Length: 579
Image 1 (cartoon, rainbow, N blue to C red):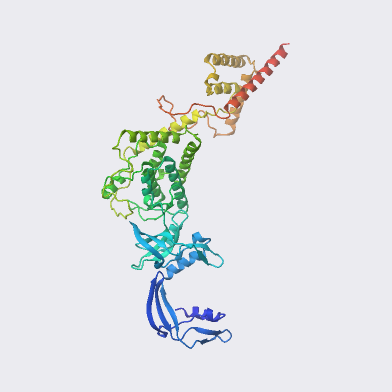
Image 2 (spheres, rainbow, N blue to C red):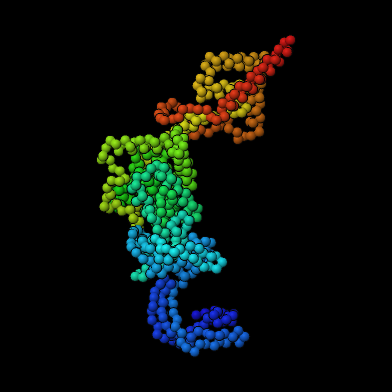
């Protein structure tokens, strides 16, 4: 025992209530155990000398009470006590406070699940958690009624700072720590998710709006977890919980290992997200009809993946396949997934609410998927659905630590990369086709002769009756060709519109070439590998009716007006010279 610590407190004491002292154990009698808690064992005893009654500050002497005093002897776990104390002292609000909760404050305790990292029990907490936490006085107020909670018992609970992973904003709220009185195991006290886990919820056969919402929210929560440089390591539908899946989800039960024994990375969490997305989209858990054993692990390492139904929206199929890519550097980040899923979620939600966006890719694909599913349900009664599939008795979906040695390095199935590339290409083509229908056009350089720009824009007009005929185009181009040819041969016509505009365009280009070496020209531009200029039959259905870009018609009208004005001025100039 540190005598200096006791001496310092005695020297600095301002009264008897501040004095502590070293008490030899033989000064206690009638010692007997009266309880055992998370911090240690409690004993009743009678202290023969009793504590200090008075402490003279001037002479540093004491007077004691004349009779024995009843006391409690406590032999505790200082590590847990300090952990809880630190979180309380640093708490900025009730949601950050954890506390020691005696096990006898729980009732109706029953086991509700068991995984590879611990056992889960349902319980009712008699006192309920802290409602308000005064930062200044470190005092609390509690709710008046019992609260449903989950007690999570760890097989190995040593590093207490690790449990902070469970109290992140993205996870089930962490209320405190208790101890199973029948074992030395400590238990975390977590929020009880009344709506259960995601796998159970998916048996409700949810709609596409809810599927997209769930996918986006999961990607957002995992983005936040990865920002903290925390890797989940045990990410599956059984660890995704909610009070009401219609509104929000929580992520719980952080894990330990990966299949092949290598260090767990953020990319492994992305792979798990792909499996979860598959289950959300199809309603089926992965590999339900085969044993989950080393043979399956070997097949997965060799490229086996769940079969994505062909009618699944291709944009979602592509997301799932990118998450499963064995080339881990090719997998998207959760930030990238979130950005993409946010767009799909928003586009489809607007379609449902306002009946707009029906020509967007995700909307078209979901409508087709729904039509296919409804047709299947109406034509057959034997189709396997998320409500009637059979699970193999050795297909186990609780968390387990599977220690398989000598597994091969994961690789993609033989056709995976080609199929993903073709899917990506087809999505790019569909996206481009939809954008063109919505008014996308190549950008005409601003220094292009305005008379030529006007011809091109008239040809692109989505109002097909406004497009010129080839006879009209021929007559106009014949004139420009003749005017410029005469200018080149006879140095005449330099004041004609087409000649002036071509001279200016040439001067601009020559100036660009002389001042920079990085300008993209027809000789050095880069072609995207999926920009294909050979003839192909592209069978795109449900494309919207072509329309002009928002400002197209105004710009074409202004261009036509300016050309007419220039032509009239030029004609007047020629007439003046003739006279």
